[in-house]
Image 1 (tube, helix red, strand yellow):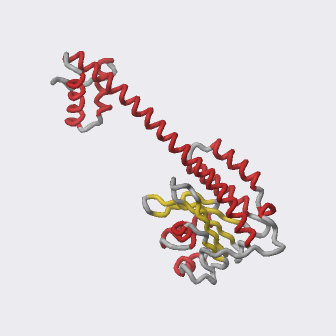
Image 2: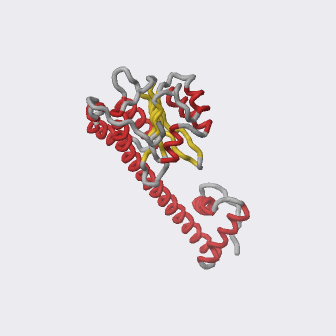
Image 3: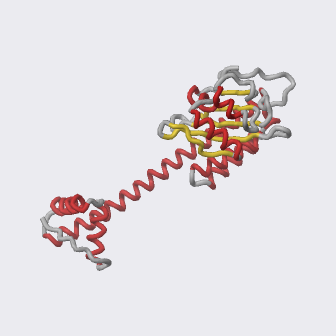
Length: 260
C-alpha cells in the first residue's frame, strides 16, 4: 500500500461517530484554546486529547506532532514516551511515513511495521520498539506552518478503515484549532512588538527633548547626538535614551557628555 492509498471502508464496520465523539472533542478543543496562551502548551494538550479520543478497547493510540522549523523536522509534542521515541528516530533518519506525509501532503499508512518495505532503515529501528502500525496525517494550516500528526498503535493492523476515517476527522478539526492558536499567537506577538516599539519611541523622544534643552539645539541634531553615542558605545539607542533620562532624574550616574 502506498502512502496515497486508503483502505476501502468495510461493510459492517462501526461508523466514525462510534469511534470518536467529535462534538465532545470540539468542546475540549475550545477549552484548550481558551486556557493555553502558549502554542507549545496547546500542542501538548492537543496530542494528548487526540490520542485519548482515538484510543479504543484493546488498541491504545500514541500521538505526536512534528513541525518544520528552519527547514528541519522537529518533534514538538508527544502524548507518551513511545511517540516521542519514534518521532525522534524518524527525524534522525530524515525519512519515514510521517515525514513523507508532511512532504507530500498525503496520508501515510503502515499496517505492519515488521512487513513494511518502504523506509527500511527507519522501519528496522521502529521494529525494535513496541509499535505495530503507524498512521501519519498532514495538518492543513493554510500556509501558516507545516505540521503532521503521527499516530502509533502497538497492534499490527491497528488502524482499520473506520479508524483512519475517524483520525482524519479528528486531525482536521484539530488543525483548525491549531491554525486559530497560531493566528492568535501571531496577533499577540504583533501587539507586544508594537507596544515595545511605542515604549521605545516614547523613551527616545523624551531623551531627545532633554538633549535639546541641554545643548540648545534642534530635534534632528539632538537625535543625531543620541545616535552617535549609541554607535560609539555599541549599545542600543533605547539604552542610551534610558541613561539620559535616568541621569536627569538622578537615578544613577551617567558620565557621557552630549555635545554636538
